[in-house]
Image (tube, rainbow, N blue to C red; front, side):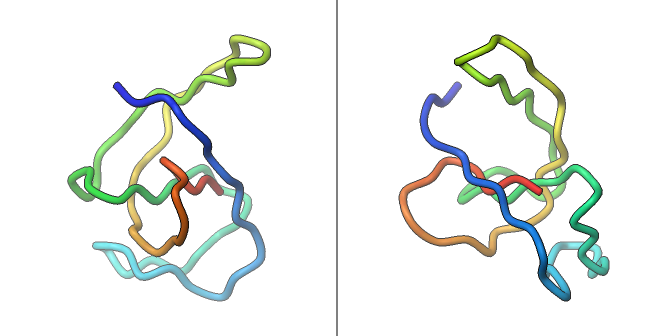
Length: 70
């Protein structure tokens, strides 16, 4: 379990993930520093309690955030 800041990433041309997929900013996926690729995680918005399962398929992000979400 981790608790921290996640960010949203949007318009990009590609993402370098384990399956070499073309980045789709309208699909649900995420980048994480250490989780196995691919894997899944439940992400919860602590302000409203809503959550969803997201696919971790990328590592390309910067800063001290826990996740970068698309």
